[in-house]
Length: 403
Image (cartoon, rainbow, N blue to C red; front, side, top):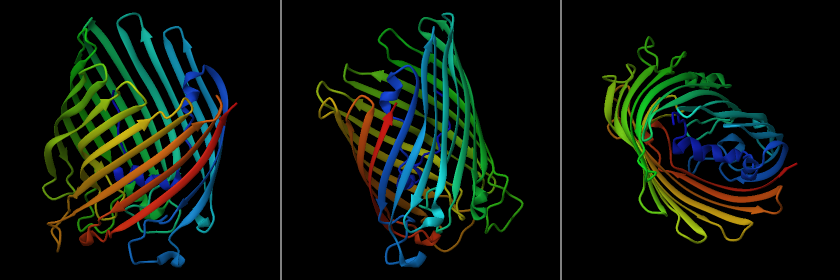
């Protein structure tokens, strides 16, 4: 499936301090329209990701905040079509850093369609407004990030075992804070895939993809202000979904990627990129996941606009009882930066992020869900770029109900 991913570890874990309350998983199983409401409380002991041994912003590092949200969920199968829509509004209030208070929005719609026996696909659109992470940005000002996503994907069954698929997607990112508007961008992607699916249920495909990024504003500190961070990225990858056994599945999307971004040195870089997931679901109450990846990713920094991320993750899901589930994961990611020009220390522009997350979900009733969680994040830092070492811990509790 075609998608534009803007979730490197630094962004995903960094955004955890807002702990947006997800639409309950049990909402997906019920058809029709439902009303949704939720409340939450969390404490982050390093909300703005302040480096060790520093105490700026009023000599305050940690803060607690409350979340209140409500919305609707609609899920319906109509003949061979499936439509799912969710829309929610949230209000987040901080106890100390009150200037960060904001009203969030999250709207998503997906239409999975089939036409006869030969054609199938999906269309989706989403809009999200939330607080951008402070992992790579030193400030105590509110910086809301808005993302709009649109996607159309269609497949043609040319043979019982062969399918040709086409997809296009468009993502737009805008930032509220003037000092961060250089991160505003539009990413457009198009891909085509030839897929083979034997009777075993496994599949293998060859994917050709082109991604184009357009940055309307120049990044500060550039010597040559005529060059933007616009880029093109061409990919040729193999997609594999191998059902090795009844409990083990290997998923991979790996291949060759060439990225051209004139604002950086020679402007060209290439190599192997991709992600591999191993899913192990033995009989019993515990399921396991392991992932490794090597991918280009954007970064919200004044000095660098993208990184090459290499990472690994292990996770376990324990279904303790029929109503209690515990999820745990550990993640490590190394980020390699590509400097625009040589400077002292530019030959060693790397840092790493480690994260550990633990969450327990209690399905109190069919409609009421209670969640508690703990998250730890630690960055090694890259002194040459002014990104210092820090660590942060977050605790959270929330409850939601589907009427």
